[in-house]
Length: 216
Image (cartoon, rainbow, N blue to C red; front, side):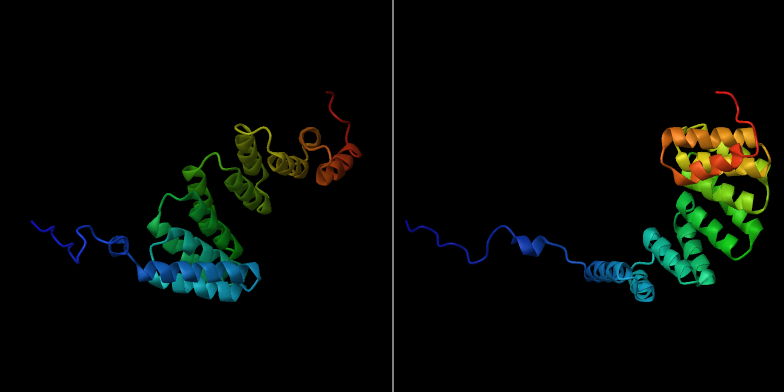
């Protein structure tokens, strides 16, 4: 009996025949790489254009919408940035980062009611976010709503007593509210956490020059 001759067609498929190839995904990845390269070279307009190309291919990528909005904001195109962040919110309606970007953009446009609504939504989505608390408190302080800002900063410090910037902001808030002893304590705490912090050193000297330091 003769041995059967080998079949010219293998019984198992070749590896490359099983590999899926998605041209759209490849082009999107290429656009994002070019956007990163131009961004690193500080060519923001070119980076923005490549992000737009990526979104034409995949309009459901929340992170790319956020990146596009951030570049538009940096380029001064605040209304366009608002549209990009709004699109990101529609795709991911619980993303605290998106709400924060929307708040900052509305604030830049002088639309304070809309900005505060989005700050509150960001805080609801991520109550422990120090970034949200810092930016929201800055918004409140800019409107001289010092009591609201102080409560917010104290709330933030309740879950993070090691945050140097929160203590700095609280110290400034207390100073502006003329609670100098509280301001002194905040700046003193900053120097315990970061002994070389130049801002705290300067602020502490200012407060100490006009008030009696509290007893330790």
